[in-house]
Length: 423
Ligand code: NAD
Figure: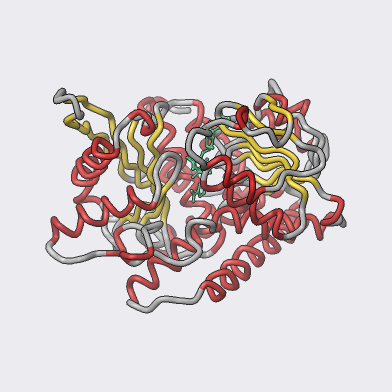
């Protein structure tokens, strides 16, 4: 990492840059472009003062990073988590750029976040924090500029508050300023489950490619939030046996398969916040979960969960990366040497931004689609991206991750070359 990137220097940003460097090297990317694509276009740091319910004022750190806008307005989620920092947000923004280009959406990449533990705030505090953060980044977002969406720790309600804050400021309703909104204000059918549904579609394609049978397959999922829980439910709907799931407090393991609708009901019921209370299998740690023998492992929590420390113990046939950046560079190599087929994050979890794109298009047209149209179009786009990546990886003798990165980076590079350097 060069000195001019000191502000961003964190493990997650280092991972994103190392992946980029590997791909750029292999592609023989123009050195001028290489430097431009490494450093985000715009990085915003804001302090977010919030009046707490007890009358005191607490200040939170907020960020919005726009990595690249050569192909269209930038797009990316907003994360509320105690570990959020500028480097992590910049890494996530860079991955969004490659992801949108890889699957062919007319967007650049962005990401935002606030360093906060949202579960420790009351609903009123969360609303005040969201509205203040939204107004701090307001000049830099908009349907034609930069369009936020949910990520870890945020949800449709948070998006609704951002949409309302923006609309109040400009004086008219602007549903297209965010995606992942509630249906009542211009959200899209199928958005909430979209990332999980996309993970399932690409997993099924990978299984077909590897000649693995659905009836015999077992699935393990780390993280049971938006991505993990919908992945679990839809995997089961497609006939796969989900044998373990987890959240940050630990997991549940049942080799016969978990009944996901029943588990969801109990998990969301009042008083049940951990899997330890739900007697549907054995309680296990996240370390044990990642080492379970299974056909498909889906990390759907945070980044760098699979590292040189535990990669040796991973025993899946397919790693479908629901989370962003769940595998470190060293772990990636270990898993590849073990013959594990990796569906990289920028492909595996692209269902979320694909349906976010549908939502943005519907908002612009004031014309809303049926659920079936959304599922069909999502399947068409993500399946085509999977096969393009697979063909490219075989032609180049590259891993799926390298092929996906090279395809995404190439499209962004072409846009930069076409537009030239201003002034
Ligand atoms: P979420 O906040 O809804 O859920 C996160 C889940 O991870 C929770 O169940 C939490 O308990 C669990 N978790 C946190 N730390 C953990 C740990 N150390 N071990 C095990 N579990 C842990 O977040 P989400 O929206 O589901 O996002 C999950 C991942 O998917 C993130 O990497 C995010 O960037 C990525 N992603 C999300 C979307 C989306 O549409 N929401 C789209 C693409 C990628």
